[in-house]
Figure (cartoon, rainbow, N blue to C red):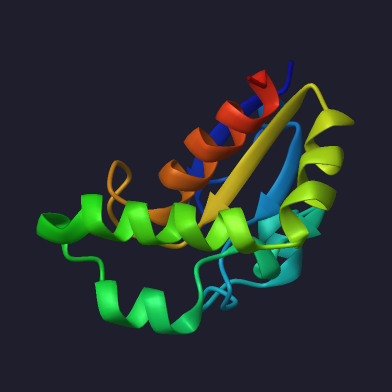
Length: 120
């Protein structure tokens, strides 16, 4: 089973990160490709621009955001390919730009995908 870690883009990469995937739709400000040491950029799996802007990282609306994001993921054809990608790696780190480490889309994405990987 794949282990999924989460790390802010502003935290230095480490050997324990395994396969590093940027899960933001937008490239993080002030970061170069060399600094991030990414293996993949999965912008197609990130929340839609409309959802991201409507949520605006409002912690009071996180549950509502998470529900809408999961609904987007259920309709997103990129999810199946992404799950196959994850299945090829023991350790994957989702790299994201949000400031809040507990309330962000990467948390929702990780939990959603772990549910998908564990099956019915």
